[in-house]
Image (cartoon, rainbow, N blue to C red; front, side, top):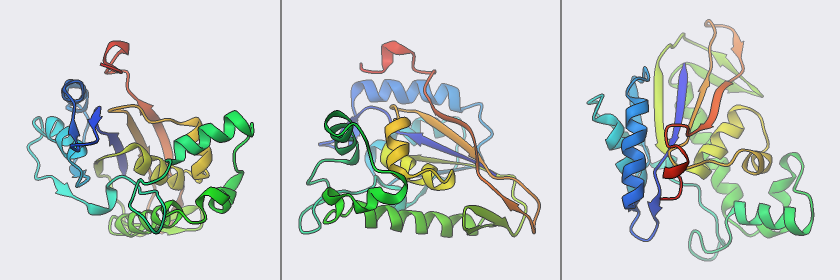
Length: 224
């Protein structure tokens, strides 16, 4: 099974839509994705991801499926609104700048700035939803591996977000979330491809073919 995670184009967060440059990025992305052997399109309920998916689906004509649980991960004070505090990337940048380090392993979940933040619980819920989703395709999560219950050679694409991609890909590859966001930033329309393969009754590890590939954009399209 092949899994593509595709981040949306440059967004206008206030209107939850693509900017003019974001539309251009999505159109260029579509020219690359049209040759991928994708069988199913799934998209976040957020406008910027849906619009990006629509550009690519022009070449496939699939009935796209919206999955609420692949919207962007949420952070922010538990007593307030989502995104009411600094995001994980800002916190990581601050740690590197001022502490010259970041949490090891799953210690990030105990970071004082996150103890009253919704981020940890939200990521855990997304991972549960993702593993439940994969079980329907014949992959049951057991520890660090997947037990294969039925052979599946399909290729699916998630049109989603940088944070959500980081949370799920770090889970698939058994890399701590905080380490992943530090070392693997997600660019606009960046594509990440992973695969899980094996015969029924065996165990398999998810493998990365490539992470955050955005060569289709070229340097001129990254920032408008």
